[in-house]
Figure 1 (cartoon, rainbow, N blue to C red):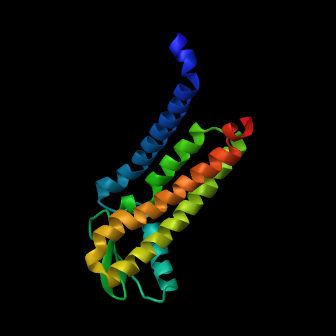
Figure 2: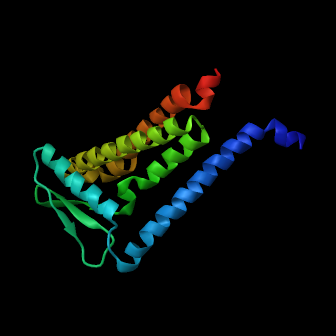
Length: 180
């Protein structure tokens, strides 16, 4: 009992984080299940692919989203060259779930928490669209650098922004920030 009292804040943090992460992950998995059975991409992934196509247009290139027959992904072209396959993992929902779980774990006022999660998720979504468009452009010009670009540079960018959002939340809006 003495140990529980000593580590109570940390244990509450863990319970909030893992509880939120579990609930959101289960909900997202249930959302994906019908699309997995049909072998089609889910609407969020399709929206991300189509929005990335628009963003590629902002770069001055033409692009197409080409669904594959009975596959849970779509092809994305850059100047008529197939450069990327957009799958469920490309839609950044799992990143948003992780983001929201940490924000909830470092609680703040209820309304501020909800607003920060929505605004932060919108920032992550927009950044992800730009990430995919720039990745397609980079892969078009430097296809031999796929591992570096897709595996290092662009994940580092999106997770770096998520980290900065967490720092902002903890230092400005969470209960931790108000107690200092």
